[in-house]
Amino acid sequence: MPLRQFLSLLFTLLILHGCARTPPEQALRETVTAMQRAVEKRDASGFMKHVSPSFKGQSGESGDIDRDGVRRLLAGVLLAHPNVKVALTIVSLKIEGDHADSVIEAVAASGVGALPDHARRFTFTLRWARSGSDWLLTRAQWES
Image (cartoon, rainbow, N blue to C red; front, side, top):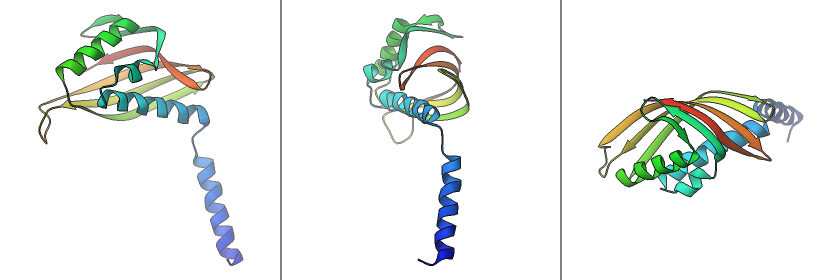
């Protein structure tokens, strides 16, 4: 490989490395993706393993909700909607030490045919706490 190509490759790798996410951010993004996939796979326990035992949440429709309330809400959604797809966008993500705040826009759709019968848009404002290398959801507010 000529020196010019080698230096060009090295420069590109350095730039890409500089753009890489930090391990805590990458781990949090992976947690969000795991929760999304758990809903789509109808795996309530896979979702709930990312929810802190001390979770507190609030929605305009449901009011205050704790971890057990999230479990019941999720079970009800999965029972009523056997085929759920979720599209997420992380609008903002700020990590400070072992805590993080994020805003996530989500569209959840369900139906049996090629096109969904139902779809809803949600905005989630979330608070996370790191436990070892894992992130747990500790607080949430959402509206549709």
